[in-house]
Length: 245
Image: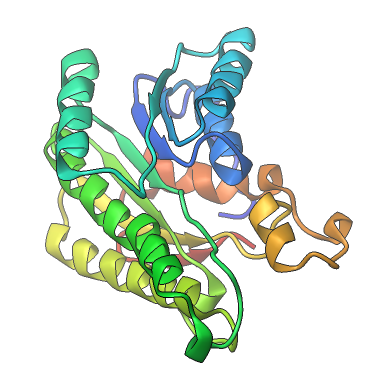
């Protein structure tokens, strides 16, 4: 799938919600999905960034996207209910959900973690992902072939010193994906994880400030895997944790 080549119209007539769509992998995924025919819903905390992605999509002649400003640190279940109601009213269904939004927090010994930072990481990386998936489920069931993608990490599969709350949140993400995929079984919905690996993003730069970013893969180079799991060609793939590199 790393060399997957999607047809130009592989996502035509699909509506896909992307969290963390204003920057990094989320931005590139939004542009890529739109390029292949999808109507993308851009969710993120910074309206200006979302507007920039919106403009990029429209200027390229792709289907007109939608914008949803939302800070997941403060989002409530009513916010997610309202989002689901709006999507249903405007689009009728949801064909894809890319749970991409995450925060890193600070790295250091687990013994010294800040409680408020821990809580924020869990709220964004775990609770918000669970909530948004829960409230999108009725809309995903209305799709003929729906895909949910969670974003994992290498430190969510094997513990690594000093990655603390972030690593714990990604272990939770892996467990959430596995549980949900077992529950959907062989239905119209499939649920998988992507571990993007070391990628040239601002989050990576904050974790490894001295690293030579030119040696890292770009988000664009990871898109074959993101396209494959969102396109119908992967409709039999469920419950997998896949490396994008």
